[in-house]
Structure formats: C-alpha cells, structure tokens
Image (tube, one colour):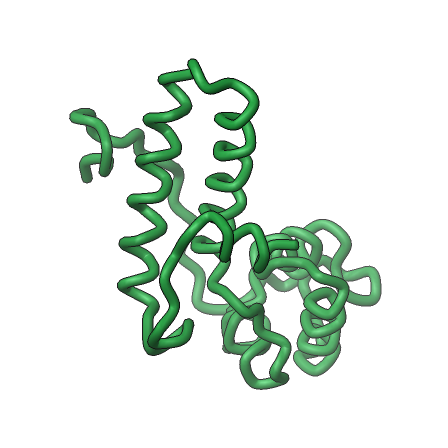
Length: 154
C-alpha cells in the first residue's frame, strides 16, 4: 500500500505468528489480566504501552504475550467495559502531540520549511482521522485546531 504523502510504497513489516490459543507457558488468569489492564490505564498509559508492559512485566510474574488470546478481548474493549478508555483514540492523540511539537518548533524556527511541510501533512492526517472518528469516538461538533489540541493534551 502506498504512503499518504509520498509517491513511494511503504516498507513491509513483520507479521504476528498465527495462534488460536495462548502458549502453554502463559497461565494468566483472565480476571487478573483485566484488573492489571485497568490499573495501568488509570496510571495514564495508552493501550499500546499497556500491551508492552503486560508482555514485559506480566501479571503476577507471568508474562502475557497477547491479551486478546488470554482474555478473548482486546485491550480497548476491556477499557471500554470498565469505563477507563481514553478520551481520544491513540492514533489521533499521537498525531496531535506531534502537531503541537512541530508547531512549537516552527514558532522558534520560522525558516524551517521542511518542518513546515511536515506540520501541514500531520494536520492533514489529523483532519482525516477526525472526520473518520467524528460521531463515534469523538464529539460530533469537534474540529481540530492547534489551540484545542494544545489545551486537550495538557
């Protein structure tokens, strides 16, 4: 698949191994895993960081290689059930953080044309995602601007 703002094709990444059940060495309790997911979310971690922490640290000393195989639910589904889901989807939030960082850089370095283009591309991606998520994940009347992103991320 081609990238959005270049004429090149994207680089291919590795695929997760196909598995229907968790490995034998992973004996995690579903309730304990869900409690740990909610606990990490309340500490302010995003769903991808929660997955990394469960993989590396585990629950009660046992690593959790894949939450969806161990519990039958995705991390975001567990967070929604326990009303601990983040205000914005993770991909949109990450793009907003990047746009705010680029905008602050542009204020300090107005002649940096390469980053000006990067800021334009990032804001374009944000607007596309806002249109995609509007009504479901975010409010119907939400519109992106630097001021709103800066206020929401503080």
